[in-house]
Length: 283
Image 1 (cartoon, rainbow, N blue to C red):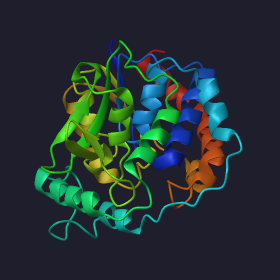
Image 2: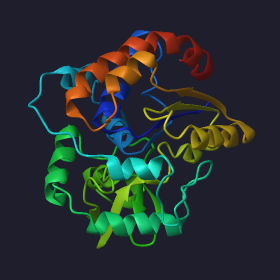
Image 3: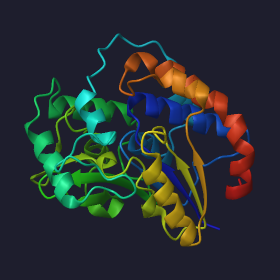
């Protein structure tokens, strides 16, 4: 039986919540970090790279709950307009299917010209600091991103020849918030613009566990991905933040002040998810 672990996007609070959840699941007897395939999008690319390269979950969790310097949370107004369907190249945003390459290219043009308070070099330093191990692991890990020029969806993996830090940074380059990341002369943005989970990449695995920090924000698209995976023969389980975690995460997933509470909330809800996941993943 093969297991794919899909780790979705969700900002700094998503990283924290996923980390706490995965640690709590291990404590409850369900270890998903050994999945045969790890798919990471945005926040999930950070967590996926961390666990796949063997960084202990307890150490990752301690980093999330440790006191941190105060940081100003970015303004998400423009981004949220897109994800709630109020903005797009044609005034509409896809609900049950990913945006077309044309729409993604339009967003990419916005990402390239947006005036952000972050630099590409600064973002690369931030991502590098989050990855204690910066070499691709031997087992399959896929990191998602979007070419900002033509809207092409790309997945980086060990065979791509792209440094892990660059791959993860590109997947975390949220349009309108962070600058795109340059790889081989082209600029890439957050793979979550196509789908917060990109769970379709797990097609063909017996069991697919989707961990979706923003599952409620794009539930129709997530439901469609789950339905497609099940039609293809996979057993699929989805974990989204419970009520307590939603409250801990708050309205802005990029708010660093919510990091510690989000990590604790993820760890706290793990026990309730463990029985279902244990039955599905056999772990």
